[in-house]
Amino acid sequence: MAEQPDRKRRAPSPALDGASDERKKPKVGKPGAEPNSSLIGRSLQSVKSWYRGSRRDAGVSQAPVIEPGDSGIFVTCARNKEAKSVAEIKDLFDDVCKAHTIDTMDDLTGSEFAERLYGRDIVGASSTEDAGVDVEAELNNEIKDMQKPTKQPLFTNVHINIQCVLFLKTRNPVEPVSFCQAICEDAVQTKAKRTRFVQRLTPMSIMGKATLAGLEEAATKALAPHFHDESKGPKKFAIRCNVRNHNTILKRDLVIKMVADTVGPKHKVDLTNFDTLILVEVHQNICGVSVVDRRYEELKRFNLAEIYEPSAADAGKEVSSVGSA
Image 1 (spheres, rainbow, N blue to C red):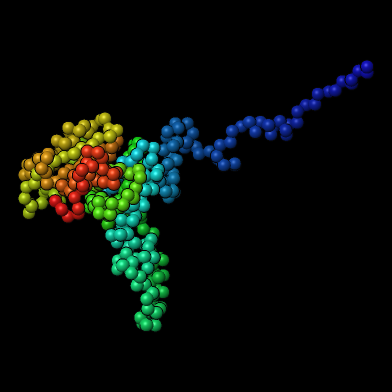
Image 2: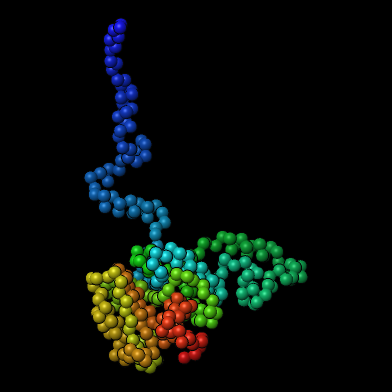
């Protein structure tokens, strides 16, 4: 058998060898971009903070958060149904706003708006000539409406990372306490089940930081209209506190004592026959305070699931009709 001729091994091509080395190197940033010298040698946490700050300065939208002075509604829901509950509660809130003509009802057409208010469609009932409408003036009004800045939504879901608990931040003209009461009274009247996974609504008139100073400030603002008006007489009150995922400063007994001191000595504690009930919620690093009346107990503590489907203990009891005491 003929011997194979010796084949000299070819030296690797510098161009190909360089390309393979390039492929092995991880690419950082955009091609050709110089690395940010201010980030070299910094920790991962500091780099993340710098990146968040850069996005904020550049006008990139941030996830909504709860700030001191905000108002909103805590919503409890079935386990692992948080996402579906957000959709449910937003639809319910929007429907109630439209039914009560809250805000400008921008999402409704003219005929829907008229039907809600007057029970019939009166838009377009007469022609432009019959009504004597100034066409140019109407066009100018429409242009002005189109140029108005986009309004913030009445309700904004804020992710608080607590299982089975949601928080929807509200803005004016929505007042959380009266709004939740209207929803529950409507559920009692209509008997129509409008949610599957939503359970209790807990309105919060004022939010604050979960610190001693934050709780004191929130309580003072929330309680002032109800207890610090000199023209009003003494009241009997009770305090109901709920603490979730918070094990540092605000213990339940301390919260109750602080809130009771904020109420003042003029008013008396009565846990069973109170005139007003003070709700305090402490969740992680936030807290909230609101004041409700005795109707809160009659409306199943604003628990929609209990109103729609009463428990066995309440099977023989009906929630009293709206307006009854």
